Amino acid sequence: MGGIGGLLGLLGVLGFAGFLGGIALVVVWSSQNRPVRAFFPLIALALVVGIGFSVIGQGLIVVEPQEVAVVFNTLDGSLGEPRRAGTHIIFPVLQQSTIYPI
Image (cartoon, helix red, strand yellow):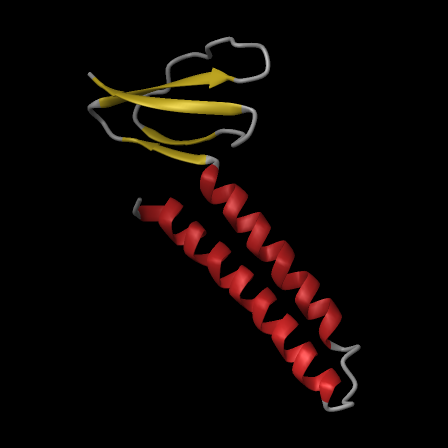
């Protein structure tokens, strides 16, 4: 996946990497009896950034000019209006999209 969805996915991965790096830093610093309280807000922020960008990246669909996207609602099984060319936003868990060539 390229474009904006790939960029948002990369930012999500970087957020998760910052979260894991912060956890590792807290473990190392606490083993050396250094104060670690200041790292907790940064670790929480990195986790929120990672989750946020991952969800937003999964919720973007890019429909090319020769394609149409059909969005299926997973809660009630209904089909939405076909989405023509452009960038569209869906809810990743509640909706699923399938792109067809026309």
